[in-house]
Length: 148
Image 1 (cartoon, helix red, strand yellow):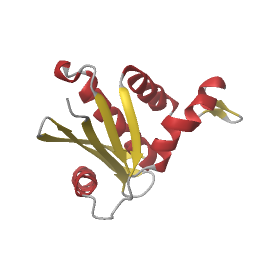
Image 2: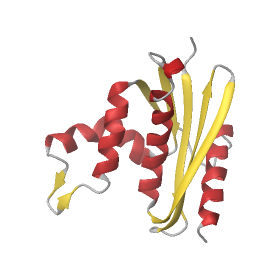
Image 3: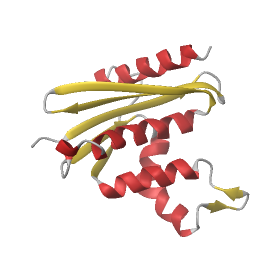
Image 4: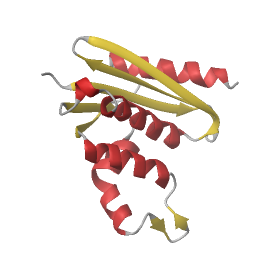
């Protein structure tokens, strides 16, 4: 079976401000998109929400069980966070000198999904003509407009 491919994007109008996220899931020749948003949020929260939504689709679809997932994100924060930085964050109990790590609840959700699946994380340059990344951005913008 081929990989399940997920593109994710999140954004805000102002930071914080109205935000949106979008995902595209490609599996078995079928392309599906989903999106959501919040009236007052941050860019990083929306980027994480997109990644969580994408992996949740895979985890909650029985036909996808055991298949490799390739995630494409234009967020270095998400890619580096889940592949590199998270190990240290977890070792420190999600704490920083000022309290808890920002968005730690979302990072915990993403970590749980990532651990339950066979995922490869890939970075793509945003706004560079990558078809499905551009579609995710359009979905984000559509969600943001709902809150303006």
